Length: 241
Image 1 (cartoon, rainbow, N blue to C red):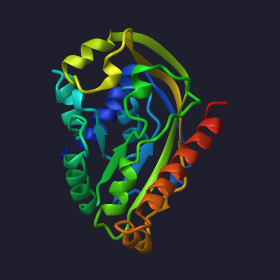
Image 2 (cartoon, rainbow, N blue to C red):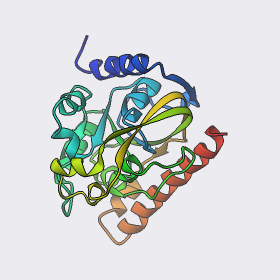
Image 3 (cartoon, one colour):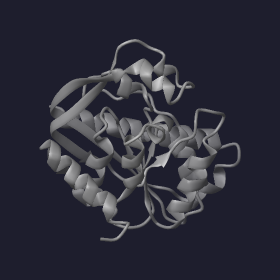
Image 4 (cartoon, rainbow, N blue to C red):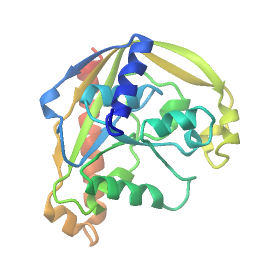
């Protein structure tokens, strides 16, 4: 088994252990090779393995800083090939540096632009929150001639929600995260039956990359971010009913 295939095999075994039934729609929209940014909504610790198993690709997911600090969880995300974000600061320099390098190697990067909010505050399966714009900056700045941004909606049809650790306990691993300064327990969403709906790939153009460093940069970032969010929101409405 190659190192490239290991995260994919771990993902299949992980979903089998939980007995999760997955249904994939619009499979033909998934680029099976080449540089890709997989963008998705995020409610469960199962999302990264689910997307890998569903797309059939090993994906390097950006994950929260605390996940690289917690014993056992740290080893799990390492085995999955995740990119652990730095503590919150002006910019995630390490993520952009590693992400750009992997895209140049024709790998797939996975991002959850909603951030930590839906992970610590349980939301309905059909809802998607506001998106952070970091992935759009990465797509525009990466020195890759052909890059597809692929929106994917995770639409839970049947799930079990358990109470995990107290949210405040997570501040021990990342005291800079404001979401960890609240009472209550971290919800653990376990998918029993889930739909994966693949959106239309958004291919970056040379004109967009040329315009990014200039006056058009902010408009381009907002355009990509809004388009991906709207695509995922539409797929969720389709997949949750």
